[in-house]
Amino acid sequence: MDPDLSALDAFLDERGYDGYLVHADSEDSTQYYLSGFDAPDPFVTLYDGEVRLLFHRSLEFGRAKRESRGVTVERSIDYGYGEYAEEFGAHEAQYRVLADFLAEYGVDSVAVPPRFPLHVADGIREREVAVTADREDAVGAIRATKTAEEIEHVREAQRANEAAMHAAEDLIANADVRDGTLYRDGEPLTSEAVKTEIEVTLLRHGCALDETIVACGADAADPHERGSGPLAANEPIIVDIFPQNKASKYHADMTRTFCKGEPDDTVREWYDLTEEAYRAALDAVEPGVEGEAVHDAACDVYEEAGLPTLRSDEGAETGFIHSTGHGVGLDVHEGPRIGPGVDVLEPGHVITIEPGLYDPDVGGVRIEDLVVVTEDGYENLTDYRVELEV
Image (tube, rainbow, N blue to C red; front, side, top):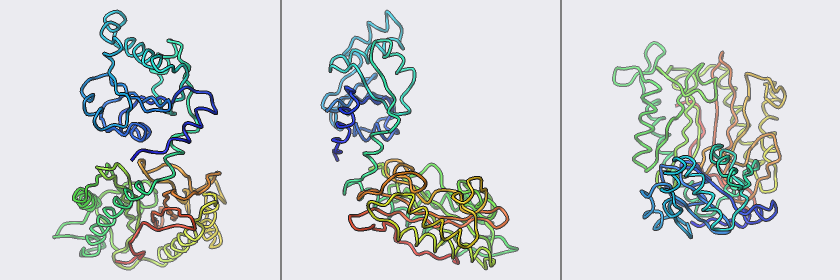
């Protein structure tokens, strides 16, 4: 897939920059998106209307010529790195090589991503290259609108995600209950055991993840608490899975809340309200709508029921204490924001809808689907039932 970088051309022209410069490994989504190359060590990508790569080490050189979208692929040794290192030392040599590389293509000024290495910026500034941080994250804004191919990558990751969620639900649903604790094969069923089953299932479907959330009881009252220890009966268990497809590098994201046993009246009420908020937010999704309006739809449901939200109380520590969603793609959290702000939904945006309620005295509930904005509304990429009791 070759991305449409016409918006980046326009950004460079409008701001008067000669190019866009990235110095990172391919775990950096901007680097991977521009270069089309997967490498574990940092390398340089210059976009000046064309994609140009520079490698400090020769290890990836041959593969980059075959696999990357670089029109030119070069090495530091092509710019006299050895002589520079002997005279000035290794660090200064890298800066001089990079400055010479930019000069080769007539680049005197560059915009760089917000997390560009400061030492590299300072090093080439000393060689009279103007470096300006792109605080607006122009490439991130381009990445937010997915092509049909990218949407298929997300869809594939989501199918794996659903298989992993089924595996997690089955463990919880089939557990025995003893003294208020879930048991499996005579041993307490733990958050860690469910996470292991999730990870193994994802690996079988070509996906992986560094961490996932299986949080029960008071743990579930913290939206990003990963969860640990034995799982309890009659309490909500939040399962939030956000894998990355190992081949495409695109993510998926979904959450379900399960309860094995009898949830109390408050948990039932909270779940029903969260399902109502989730459906209200989905109904608000269409092109041209601000993400804040989708967030407002969820907040309206909670506030009408007398529950706090960050919209009604920016210092709230219980209730609905996060935004309604976010973009998903090469990063699991990217634009657009489905919350306060001015991000406008456009066809091709892939976003989550994930309202929830949290209180240590009750636990937490959250429901999350992954959808793509279309020309006339949205398509839900999530095919998984919404039900509390298992």
